[in-house]
Amino acid sequence: MKRFIALCALTVAPFALKADMQGKSGMGSDDMFVSATSAANETWSDRTGVSAAFTNSKRPLWDVFTIQPIYRTEGTMMNTVFVQGDFGFQKWDSPQLSLGLGYRRLAASNDYMYGANLFYDHEWDHSHNNVGTGLEWFGRFFTIRMNYNFRVHDHKGHMKEITHYFGSHHTTGNLDLDFQLPYLPWTLASFGPTWHHDREHKGEQSHHWKYALRMNLAGPVALEAGFGRGWGQGGYVKLAVNFGRAAFAEHTLSDAGIIASEAFTARDLKNYTLETVGRFGWIR
Image (cartoon, rainbow, N blue to C red; front, side):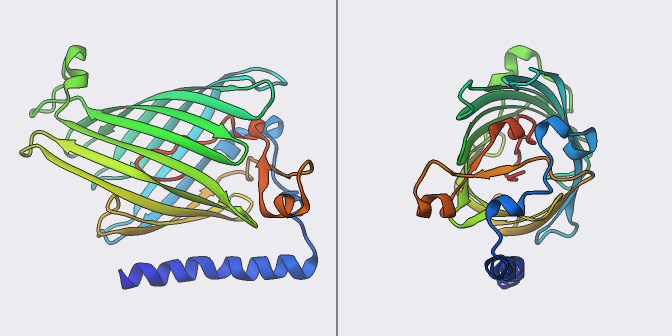
């Protein structure tokens, strides 16, 4: 725990300096995101990256991830169908492959967006095969996500019949609320409950809360730190880097009071139609 607290302190320190430099230079939140790309100018590399997370486990967790569109409504971005893939040591102690299909619909007013996704996960060493489903709701200031995963293999590693999927002996789920911190448009906070049920081990059940911060250092680089029983002994620090530039742009409120426009930054949801789906407790 002491090591994790120290890592968190090192994580936050650069942002105190960043905020101080912003105040001295007179830069606003619009200036901070001037180099970000918009959804219309994205390339495949803007939606592809690598990440590494450091916990109390023997080896760091790492993965290579990408999210790419199958179909997008031109101009309005109202409908988006996408595929997402991840490969690496994402949660367990052996390589894992995740493949997913998702859909998002943006309201005509651009004030909110909702979506659903379906994932298949395969972990090699223990022949774990999981199916995951998720629901998302995006607002201009916060995001709500709910994920549910169930194991679909028997003791010999064989896949179960589809009629047995929802009778899985091993299930996990999580509910996350992500939101911008006041006066820190580059910082995203996240918290929510997770639960685990394993009928194969005497009906083992656990419920706990997890908390995390994700901070955009510069362009494609983001740093994430969190704690909760979902990550080994209690905490992690994660670095994520896109192969391209950051694929989002923020907009300061112009139709609110001075204090509100300085404290909070409204999102243009057109630039979030291809945001990576957060799974296994990561913010993404």
